[in-house]
Length: 318
Ligand SMILES: [Zn+2]
Ligand SMILES: [Zn+2]
Image (cartoon, rainbow, N blue to C red):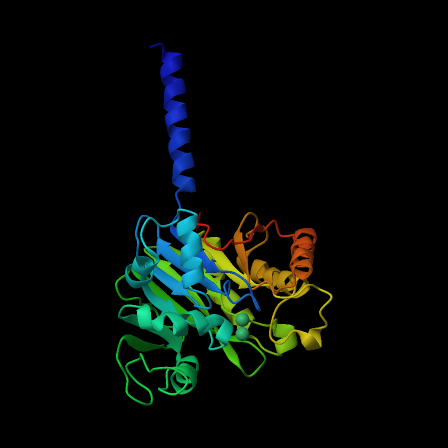
């Protein structure tokens, strides 16, 4: 081998290594439901696990079974739907108690295995009082009214505190969101080793909500963007720009979404969101509105965001 070819080989190996280092994913995501309304077989629910494990948490649980079946069809799972539900999903993190975020959990609870449901105190109380109350549904929890069957451990999350997620290596930290002020929703910052993903439940923009909750969230995660430890943000955009602000009902539209992400960029540094992965959730039908949202986000994306539209049952990496 000549010196030149040795050097070349060396160079190829080093660049291959650098490339694989950079591309190595931290999390796998399997969306079980992605829409913001009406289509009851496809409502907000996202499975997230550290890469190379089967230890999934489910972020919101609007649709479970229909999404798991779709994922099996797409070969994201090689086991039965029941095994995915009972063994792969280690717990649920619920952002708020609106039915489009919890109906899958309620309906699937008789077939589920014992695990933990995580939510902030207000959200947990709503689920205990209105759903798992032995009247509208059996109390599968371990507290609340009626006769608790103790299948689920209902664990209240304190804000701004890292809570370990049972049977996984992940932790979750909850931040409050404003979803028609003073009604609150939640953002979850998920951590595994030194990598993070951020999931936002439904939220309105600070300007419309007369709130500083998004600003506070952006301030908390900006350092993780600077250090490149944050691998992606799940955030809703429910309506196209034509929706008047007074009829947003605690949701975002492309104008407000871009304004909010500019706030984040200002905190994290100019250019910091270039190629940053943003997963757009909660698009509300009808289909022509969804098409409008996608067009508007594309034309208004002056931050270089890498916008991802999740598909039900289709795995992707972060
Ligand atoms: Zn909601
Ligand atoms: Zn919703």
